[in-house]
Amino acid sequence: MRPDRPSVEELLEAVEEFLRDHAMPALPGHLSFHARVAANVVGIARREVEQSGQIEADQAQRLMDILGHEGSLTELNRELCMQIRNGDIELFDPALMDHLNKFAIEELGVDNPRYSAYRKAMEEGG
Image (cartoon, rainbow, N blue to C red; front, side, top):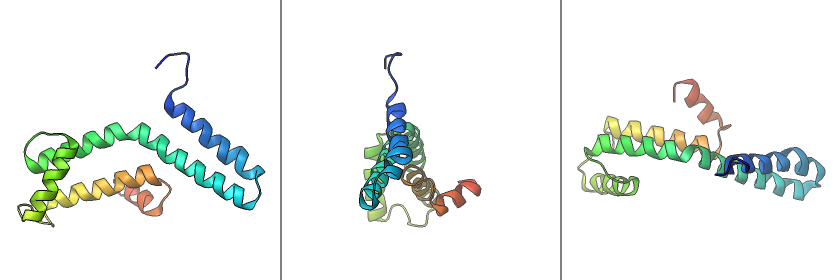
């Protein structure tokens, strides 16, 4: 990134702010709704850009701990599915349940951090 240019996160934040603070209030009913949808989409994209690296690293580490070896996130997820399907990992294995719970919370944090279940999970130590 060049220092004289805004980051992708900053650009997305500016578009989201414009849609929420300027376009939505100025547009009539249905168009305002579409501006809200667009602002939500931009917000999801912004959070994805900001958080995906850490989320993927955390997910990969949890999967490596469960499976006992390294690999790409895609490979580890594929193997986890295969081991569950084959019965090599029990569905209610505590490490698996912890991973799936954290995975769901991470996804909610990107998709809709204002969602009440996400806020509750964060209050409980997510």
